[in-house]
Image 1 (cartoon, rainbow, N blue to C red):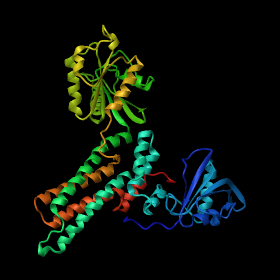
Image 2 (tube, helix red, strand yellow; image 1 turned 180 degrees about the vertical axis):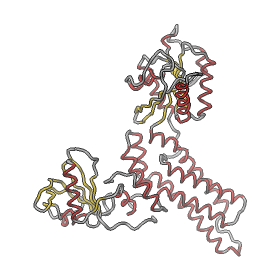
Image 3 (cartoon, rainbow, N blue to C red; image 1 turned 135 degrees about the vertical axis):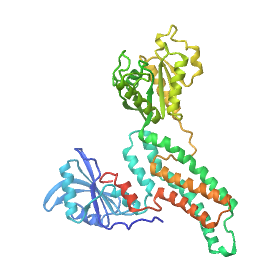
Image 4 (cartoon, rainbow, N blue to C red; image 1 turned 135 degrees about the horizontal axis):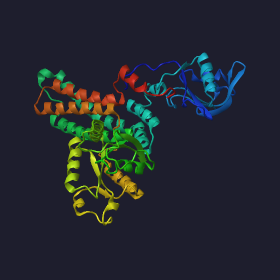
Amino acid sequence: MYLHAVVPEDTIVAPATAPGQSAIAVIRVSGQKAWPIVNAVFKGADLTQQASHTLHYGFIMDADLVIDEVMVSLMRGPRSFTAEDSIEISCHGSMYIQQEIVRVLCANGARLAEPGEFTLRAYLNGRIDLAQAEAVGDMIAAQNQAQLDMAFKQMRGGLSKELQTLRTSLLEFIALVELELDFGEEDVEFADRSRLLKQVETMQAHIQPLIDSFQYGNAIKQGIPVAIIGRPNAGKSSLLNLLLKEDRAIVSDIAGTTRDTIEEAIHIKGVAYRFVDTAGIRQTDDSIEQIGIEKALQKIALAEVVLYIFDVSTLSEQDIQTDLNLIQSHNAKAKVLMIANKADLLKDPAQQPQYLKAFSPLIMGSTKDQALAQAIQGALQDLVKWEQHSNVIVNNARHQQCLLAAQEALTKATDLMQAKASSDLLAFELKSAVQSIGDISGLISNDEVLGYIFGKFCIGK
């Protein structure tokens, strides 16, 4: 059962389409009096006598003045997004028309909705949980197929279902441990510690992959950060231009041209990659260039993937290893894809130098050739593949923090059981784990958390 505020009884209204001129727009109305309020300004069929999930043609009126010719969709609760009586008015896209329709509806008893209030009502009415509500926001913000797929799975309740199973089984043990406290003087043990320990370890084994998935999920949500790293004149800017298929970065034979970072996003097979062109890494007395180099090193630390590009016609094996050690020292977890550039300058462009066979993964080519970009795109898809231990990917920082808190509580519970600690201490840690898991889906929540989450939504959603 959700522990939350009482569902509001008033009726809300707001445009559901983004501001701006369009062919049509949709105005949403939801609440106990949605149908009579709209019916009071609608000239056409008597809406209060119509069946749910029907569509009606007519006019929105202000007294005897016609505001617009519209189509009205009727939905009786709980078979609506908010699980309340709802109406969607499809009108012409003029901002003036939308404002006038909202005005006359408010004059007849509705009020303007707050940001995210329609989704909040869906949550308060138990139609969706908090994790699903947050997924609605992710779905609206999705800019590629990977983001959309991830949000859709979350909105369908994938994470919530997985956690609810774990939470339910843990609650059974908490009840038994609590029962032991009632019989404290008799020193009885209702909860089999060996079975409970096994159950907790199983839960931890389920939770850890979800925690681990956050790095991947957040990268998909925000775009996978890719730092282009190399020495001056290695071809970093040329590589960015090649990938973008436009002259975004300045290319020059003069070393140290790039003084700041340049960032652009590219979508590859439905996934966003945020490529960052950086200053060439080298020792320099130029204070401005040094600032650019420091920024490059910062980008290495933040990158999921590093494209290390080097001049295969001039750079030695020792120099390459020095650069790789530098990358490793700033980000040991980053996946490094080596790009042996300027292969066309070799005596035999088709022959890879022998020493390069020690490095992998590596692509040899030239930033003058579009084939290099295609090879890099294919290699990137292989590099960022995530071995999924779960059907669910966590992409929300709040969810990750809740899972970390639950995992910590379960670890403490395991330690207590192994130390044969008292039932009250064990019950406390188990309850902490249950609460942290419940916080994700909103089984236990507070007004501050709800205000933060739904306040980020747009008006009308």
